[in-house]
Length: 260
Image (cartoon, rainbow, N blue to C red; front, side, top):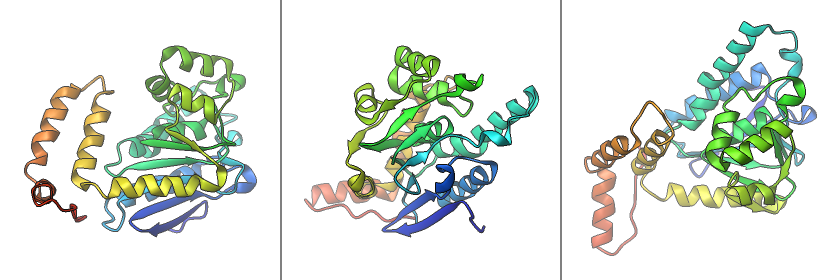
């Protein structure tokens, strides 16, 4: 696929995805969402990719929301389909990625932009980051998982406050409430994300994928997370990563895991 709104680069097993609409503060439009679907889905079957880092072009915004002009005249059914398609093709694909995904939040992450970050497994923010869900100011609510994922991360009370007031919070506030994992200086953002991803990629790829499945199951009302954990734990014993990890431990050496 030819990407017009994304910049993709693979380095040291990390796929860097840059949302490249800086003149629109990297707002998500239909074309960008379609490209994200192909990029994330493609990464799942690309053996050269171990993990993914998503960020926005420039220093002002990660993603400052959705492109409102595209849905300003939608009716109820069109609005429902917009949300449903976004969930199925992008946000759920990221959340359920077998490969770890880190959001590098470099500036404004608002509306659909914050929802994009929420779908990622880990979030690291720059000191100038501003995060919020302003949908109620437009007569809407978050429609790409924001009401669910924000609540999971920060609790019902804080999620209610952020969604109902539409107020933004900064990086330090986001760190305190558990919305982000880490806050760093703007100039150190990508390096911090790379360092964390590199550490993750030094671990067993199969165990990482199994852990993502098990953790996600804890939040799925249709699954018993403990049962999923048991299943995924058992599966680990049948793969080569387990044999390598145990051998390395017993031989007092560093494990060397291979990516399929």
